[in-house]
Length: 251
Ligand code: FPP
Image (tube, rainbow, N blue to C red):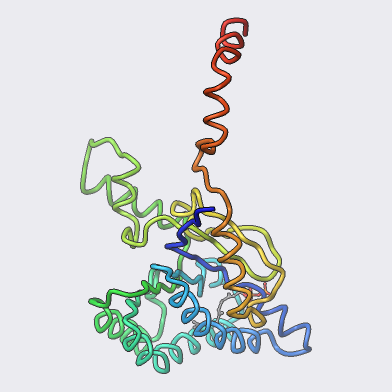
């Protein structure tokens, strides 16, 4: 069987809070443990040959969480930028943040732009943190920007795509959500139109490289038809041409 290339993998890293609560810890402890998993999964995605990995680190809806939780998430982002900078650069990874970072502390914003600039010419894995990100918001902004720049011009899928935040990431091939819920929570709505979805009960702090690898292996063997029918069905349909004609005539 030919394998599907999983060029762009997106992950909703869910279940941190429940992981901590089930151990009678504060929810933020789950984020702290979860942040340790992030680096392992980045390494594994790179080893698996993915071209892009997009991680949902903070959604537009997450702003409604308690200030302490938001503050810890901000701090974890800063810590990642400080600790992982060297590894990102050594591994030829191109790092970007997409979303609204305006409310982040100045020092974190500076660390983000520094790493984005330093890694801009890297040709390896495109690592993107979706932060202050919402899929609907992205589509609305893309549409408004298109209209502003092209008054009166009809919008097409290709044109709209070119106005998304990071069009170079392309379509999502596989979207994974940890933590047991089965929804995509406003993440990469446009880019995931034909994504394979995988939901695991494992909560993010317990998510391992080996589970990630197994998911990628199993999904890369799934048949993806993009609205078409599979080649064997096409052949069988051709061999039934007479029957097809009769059905169309008599229908
Ligand atoms: C959802 O868990 C997760 C988030 C809101 C943020 C994900 C953040 C991390 C994995 C750590 C940050 C790491 C870096 C490197 C920035 P939840 O709290 O909604 O879990 P729950 O559904 O169990 O409540």
